[in-house]
Each structure stands twice: as C-alpha cells, then as structure tokens.
Image (cartoon, rainbow, N blue to C red; front, top):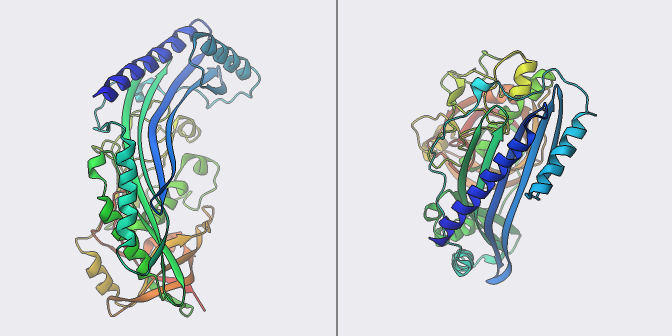
Length: 446
C-alpha cells in the first residue's frame, strides 16, 4: 500500500525532527520536552444525497517545552525547518527567563518514563477513497429515509478517517513514537407526525474501518431513534428511579474524572477532596483503567509528558483508589505521577450479568434517560442538574417518550444510589459502561 510507505517516510521525518531539536538543546543548561503530533485524513459531509463538503487535512505541530531551572515555557510551530526549530528554541528559552519560578515544575522522574515501545494494535490504515466515503454517507442517509415515511428530513451524514502520528522525546533520553487510526460515521435524522418534529442520531467509531457499523444499520438506527421520540409527553414533578441508557452513561461517570483530577485536588476545589480510600460507590462496583487495551479508543503507551501508562483500578469494591496525577500535581501532593497527563484511558466500569431488558423489568416504573442537555454540574459541591429527554417506563416496559424534564441531585448520593448496571456496554467512548439504574432522583416536569 502506497499510504503505508508514505506514512513510514513521514514518521521517520518527524522522528528526525525531534532528534534534531533535542540535539540543538544540548549545552544550553536547560531541560526540554519535544512533541510532534501530525494528523492526516479525510472528512465527508452529505445532506439529502448532496455532497456539502469534502475535506482533506494534513496538520502537524511541533511543541517545545523548556524548563529553565524551575521556570517553564512552551512554544509551538508548524515550521519544522532547521532555522524554524532554532528560532523556536531561542524563543522558548527567552520566555522561560521571564516566567515565575515554581519549585514543582520540571521533567518527570526518569524512573516513570516510557523507554520501551509498546504495541497496542492502534494502526489500521485504509487507502483514502473519496468515492467510497461519499457512498458510505449517502447509503446511511438513504437507509434512514427509507426506514419510515415519518422520516422527513436529514440533518446530515458524515464519514471521517484519520491517521495520527505521535513522536515524543526529552533531555532525559526518552525518544518514543506511536501511530493510530480513527474512523467514525454519523447520521442524524428528523421525524415528523401531525403534532411535532423530533430529531435523533446514531454514530459508530473504530480503529479499523471494517469494524464500523454498516451504513444501512447506522441509518436505520438513527431513523428508529428519531421516530421513537414522536408523541413525547411531559410528566409531573416527582422523585423517581431512573436509568441512564448505555449510550450516555459514560457522561454520568465522566464527572468522576474532574472530581479526582490532580489540579482540583491540590486546589481543594472538589467535593471528593477527603475521599481517597473511602467508599463512594456501591461495594460491587469497580472501575478499571486499561490504557493497553488492544485497538482501544483510549489506549496510549505513554501520557502527554512521556510517563508510562499503566493498568490500575480507579475504584475497587466501591472504594476510590487513586487521584489522576501528572508530574506537577503529583509533586504538589507529594505523590507519584499516575501517568494521566492529558486525560484518562479506557475506563471499564463493571456491570452485573443482566440484560438491558432485565434492568427495565427490575426498575419496573420510572424514567429512562436517552439524552442529556446543559452543563449543570458543580464539582466543588457535587450538585447536579441537567435537562433530559427519554421515555417513561411502566411495568418494566417502555410506555411512551417524554421531554422537557430536568433531573437533579448530588453526585455523591447519585453514585451511592446505583442499584445495578446492565451488560449492554457501549464501547464508543473512553468510559465503557452499560445502562445504569439509580434508585431515586428528583425529576422536574410540569
């Protein structure tokens, strides 16, 4: 494949650029990190079978971080020439002379760095084929339009395919690289009856193009979801059990990421400040972080400062096991980096061996949440309030769609009120989880 040959040549060029930058930094009495990220890919957007845009992108940037004693500066540029790198380095050093000194600033401890290459099976290239990409998007939309006569319009169908190359080095001798592929497709449809219009969507994401949902399946899914929302009703204000559908349950656990991040811990701006090694979930619930999951969407061999990623429990038997720390926040807290500079990697939330249908029957009566709106979550005190739409469940079965509701509570109580999680795990996000049943929450409607 010509594409693979081109990528190998490009990757070698990026590696040489990082090496050149590190060599130029020698004898300057500084510590340095050098990182290059380059992304190449295509994006296709169609609507009503008309191609609205076809984009090819080839974007890359060189980032240089200089530690001049305890002063730090970071500069970036798209100029990879020798003169460009020399200018960048001089600018970074000059800036560092004018920034405030911070005792906790500096390169990671050498013992934590990733010196060994780790194969995570993230790279599955596909020869760019614009016609195929356009046909994929059109087929998805057409399948949705043909699904039901109540599907009256489309908000668009998309296809994206990208290759990303990462090269990282520092003055402690680390020089590593890895590359990955990322494919995604998306379809959003509009349904209408005599009373109202509703929209909904579906999407697919994978490291391998062959693992994407078939375009016909994707279109039918989005159409089915849109039609299912027709006839939505308001409900009375009440306290009720709720289920977060697996497609959005990752959002419910994503608030834990902010609550245990190192920045919020050392700044004392989280409601979980005193909860390390304390129980914050039911005792049957685990959250395992696995950065080394083969083909994982959140898999990485090392974090954004070169620290090795590692498999670890975030929550074990309901007990919070760790903060999420980079080197700076770890030093502030007198701890070790957890390799989470830049985010999290493949959180696997445990579940019980029950299906989604069994979870509905277990709840019997309550609200199934399928979409959340707004940003009403306060990490400082844990208060939670978000708009939502979904379905009313009666006698263990979906009865009718509902809308214009708000769910509210406190995350500490909500996490403790988790009764069960079904095995319909959604793997399209960094947090992989099934549908989540909570015993009770405030639902505000009419």
